[in-house]
Image (cartoon, rainbow, N blue to C red; front, side, top):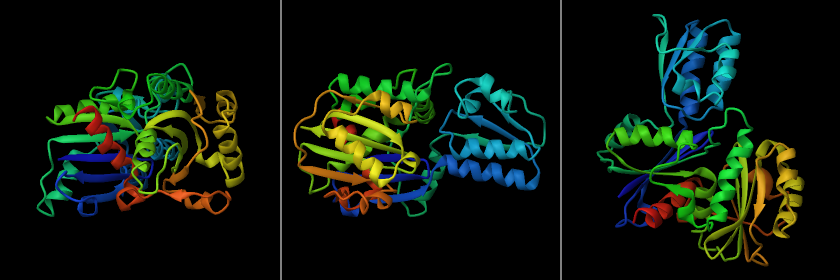
Length: 340
């Protein structure tokens, strides 16, 4: 038994996996992600006219960073420990230039807010409300851009994905029992959960969704898998359960026509890293194109905005009967491959 938590920009998708239970009977939750929860706490402090103190672990920014900017623009102070401040940017000097005071000793009267991508106390409490105990094993997916204070984190993130493809592109090439130092966001989650005595595995959200989508019963390989998320869109060519090519862009920069054009070039092996990166995305890399795609699987919370306008024969992947747990299914597959 293990708990799978897929942390996105808007939601955290939670699945309690048991081998002795059919997928349709597994317990699951779709809840706000921690960056959304914490941003709401900061906005509440703004509305009350109170300074805030962020402390804990490095986590995803997004809504949290936007709330910090709004708080400071409203004339109030934000204090943060170094680890918490790295949630905003890897370069602490840039964080300070925003107006954040990086310190371990804030003045009295601040609203105390703990940062972390996973709140184990809240998860345990939610399940205990239904008399369900959590296991001591947990797999978590987060989108990690890699620690890169002096370089574009888009480039650093894609370097990490490219290296995994060069290492074989198998699911275990994207998963970590102990993440390397460069994966600072994964590393922070690993530290937090390890300190709680948990057996831990970490993975990136993009590959987790790709491998999870392959569990759809209509999947045939070679396959093109497309995950259209709230913040990012990732595409992958998969052959014999290996990713052979990958690209990643920001969903906000795409529309159905543009995405269809990208996919055409991608499946022909013509899409370049430079054109995606210079368009504001992360990049593209092809080891090889496995041939004509036998299935095009699309998943992700924003897929509905693109499906009807792309004029392609798409399978809206719903592994284990639920699109929202695609990443969690990928985590379960990775756990089986890496941990056993």
